[in-house]
Image 1: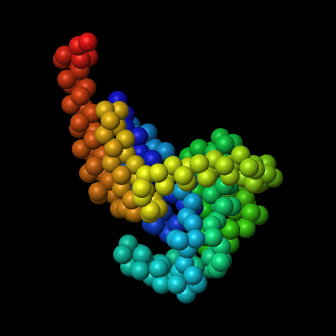
Image 2 (image 1 turned 30 degrees about the vertical axis):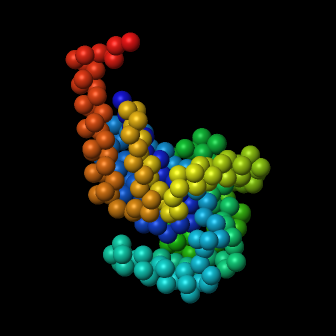
Length: 218
């Protein structure tokens, strides 16, 4: 029995950027015992800074918390935008076209928060997606702008809100024996790995019992 780990993210979230090393580490450590998934959870106006100066202040704070030698780049940010559909929809469109790993959404984070590219623009986002995926840009952009992809992104966002959490990333860990752990706003490996280890131990215990005694009687 395998557990599943779902990463709810927005492709412009600084904490999703800071959490990418932890996500990679978890996949390396538990990849043979867990299924890793990602879903879009769009940030809305309530989570957007009111100015670029405010954004830089948030980046200074998170950079210090994460002990980063480099400050994130706020040049991508457009004041007044209530949400950033292009980078998220391009990532979801790439998945629909067969690129279901992490490369596109991670490329969006890198392009915006490291390089300062304005990925709120459809053309810029689709070019970043093309470079990361190898897909044809016109097809990728057309699908990304389709009602189907936007509906899918909003459905995943609604699923995120139904969890009763507010922070991206949120990691949801589910086991086949019915256990669930939710980590909202966590960006470091240790607490996630500790929970996964504990949940895997419980799965192993259930498997051991089943090997000795079988299924429960009717």
